[in-house]
Length: 236
Figure 1 (cartoon, rainbow, N blue to C red):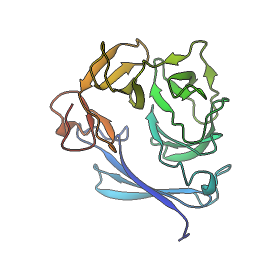
Figure 2: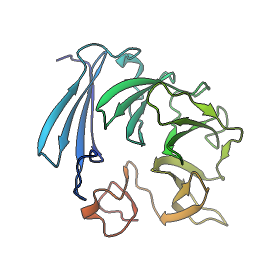
Figure 3: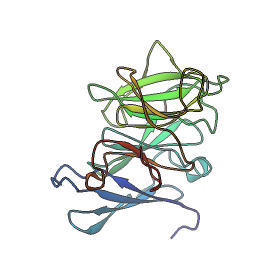
Figure 4: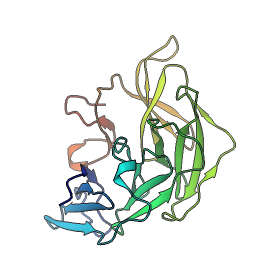
């Protein structure tokens, strides 16, 4: 095994042929110097399956991902990882179980500035990219069809702006997850904002850090639709 590598383990939705309400998958991702390798556990079969490329993944080098390989996003059946270089996205299609590289939207992004990727209507994937020198308050909005790594990003004419004291912490489905420190007109806490209607809803009053976000998963553990922190002590 190559000595220089990175690893992540995370939950994933079930495959299309898994009909049980409580079905799920676990993905263990190992990133080697020139290619990613994954092991996928299915609750339906109770077994692990290896997903690997025998050849290097084009345009992928661990050296460009090593520092900032912490940004994972999910939309329309694909996981996305943002590289430190800002030029490429690593994509894992969990239905085809294939890795690919996709272009980052053609815009400037400072190293360390994170993005948010969400699901929009009509099968579109939308990415919010912070504009330089705006303290992550103003975002350009990019859309593309759910057509794999070859689909092109198109920039919307209007930018997305955050209120003072707000931060984008991620996205779940078609909702952005926002944290607001509080103001005269807005209570502190976590909010979700629909990327289609821009409707804002407060879901909890704290945001422990670090934490992970999940929504309606796994169904057997949730009594009703909710957004929650990955920490067991916090319920939203």
